[in-house]
Length: 101
Image (tube, rainbow, N blue to C red; front, side, top):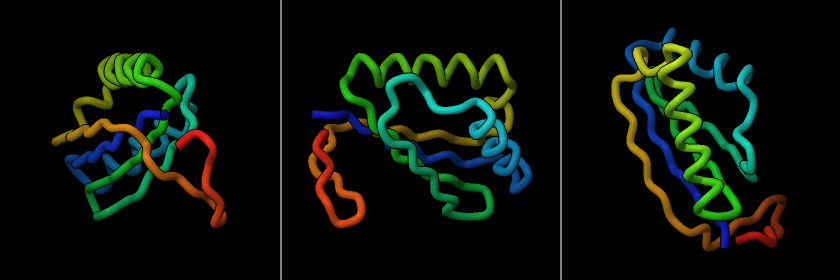
């Protein structure tokens, strides 16, 4: 069963959200990432669902994310970050169940 990280980010400003999204797209996706879905939920907030094949891969991605946030200065534009983690129990795309859920 795959593992999902659900992340809610609140930024210092609307420009900070734009800066983050450009940074994330330029960074590319984290190794082992099966799904990465980002939704802008407000002027200064973003919500994401990231799915990994197992707990080890997800933990490695979180460590890499935290390192990159610090090294690239992204941490300074984030007001708050809340992360939830859990087993992916149902996943579908185009009306079909995905095999890894």
